[in-house]
Image (cartoon, rainbow, N blue to C red; front, side):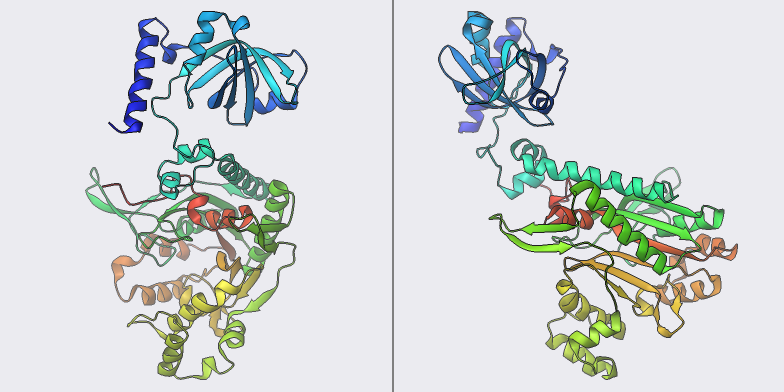
Length: 483
């Protein structure tokens, strides 16, 4: 019998003994009057409080016992005296284990070492933990356990809990900002008969009642633009998207997107919107526009300055600057050869614009640490955007890059139904079943000129919270099932 199994059996025996004595912990009720953090922040000598939390530490001093509990707000020390509880209750408290959840009533005082504590007059077991905490209780480090059993990660690492608390505040601040700008929030369908709004491989599912195949959405775009047609001039959605593609430190198959659309705007309208919004969120949630990223040793490795205005640079100018002034003058074969020499992975069926984009993503984008708007991308990359009048090979688009990754694309939306149909047909390669006819019909009813924005919430959280992996800002990231 391994040690863990033996400990589980011991804890089960303790639970059985409690139930036999008529003290089933799972039937107890307890109402805290303050959180642990409140008790510390509002400390008054002899203040009578009721607190509850998980036991994180136990120190037996003979006729007294010190216990650390932690709730969602933080940690608090409990002081338990035998002469105050009585012999029988004190012996029951001594049978408690790390991980158990207890409710404590008592009065606040300060120990000789200056620690705010509760002098317990009552200690009630509210949930018996049948499994012991992970071996490295104080700072769970096993990455597999941290992601697969996130609840253990949150128990053991207060800084992880703080990341997700801040993530919630970031999302709330985004909503507040957009509502203040006159946007309304909507919810659109996750199941779609035709996945659109991006070029990505979808997840498929089957609707039994309708007897047909559906897809999990890969983007939020097309339903929101239908709402522009219907008369919502400023609209946004914060929602889950799904792409059946690779997993990396910047990609998860299930992710959160913000998409916002503003009638009578354009890509420059969206530029001001996203710049102001991110600066507002950083200042509101973090209290600063200078975001420090640290290595595992706690040393600052980079500081990202979010102070507006952020520079703009055209895609072609950036490519020429980094890859050579003659890049766009090369023949297609020579350009592909040079791209491969530079280390880009070029697929056998790549079109010419895809070759340049592969090099951009490999060699240029990772160097864009400070916020920058990369504008006027090749029109083939974004078939839903308007062509730039000064350079018809490009579209009125920007990609906001921060910390070496794209965070937010935005563009002047294509509202010409004939041009939009032509470009979507080209993208579909003649496969008519891939065209969203309802969207095209909606455009034929007339969509106002508009600017549209997509913002990856997970990537934004990575930047603002100094996390290097997307898994560290998603509570339950996708993992291969255990065998």
